[in-house]
Length: 351
Image (cartoon, rainbow, N blue to C red):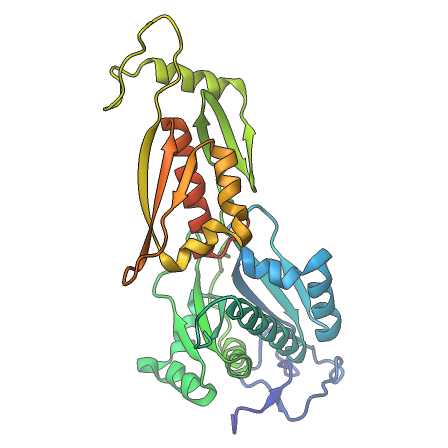
């Protein structure tokens, strides 16, 4: 591959060999590529699948879809994003190889921009690498790794990118995740080399593509009413679930510790307030508080619980959160805090 600067053209079907890919794609130097090749030949388009979290997808789509529209227009590649309320989405990039590389360059630089922007609000000094996850048929991963890991080692050394091939297949599929991280330039060079391997070693047999599962809508109970969480809101749930919950509450054989039965058994006295404590790592406390306390105020309003966050203590890497309210208020507040943590850690960002 010389200095890794080779721009290569789509593989051409050799004359007299219909329906098979050339095992040695023609390499062309220079940026310009013709979309039509010699008569009888065929311009092979390539499809690369990427696995992204909700936050990353939001960054690619941009406001009113402007970012992805610009990427499509400037790269000439088709960029499709899988539908569905899933924590993960598949982004499919299809087109001639130069269009794919342009699209990848735009995505990698966009992610780097996001990292720089997020660092302006954090005390971190070292810039984390850009990371992309490709979804590759498992039958092609052997060629990508090479004998004794030789190919993947060569790609790492010549591009400067980190490349990891997952040991297990993605759920209900015959595909594996290939994680690439590094500078945008290293990632682009790495994708070029991976594409060459994929064209030289087409998948064997049928590929069952990975389809991310939709996020199941959680149901929570507060004050005798069932709610489902949709985005930032708790939506009252149909009566059947509420009735089931009320029935379950009536079956409680004895009151929780520290609580006494109401003085008048016939009256529905609200359960006395209790207190629950949580410890949260310092570096995640910001996502629970939100900008100017917006997130913690939302959690207080939705749960009806009192929530106090202790000041940071010197030498401690954790902060104490004290939740006070009825058991239902406390469990709802705990759920909402966990949802914020999960969205921060997994990059969903929607909750």
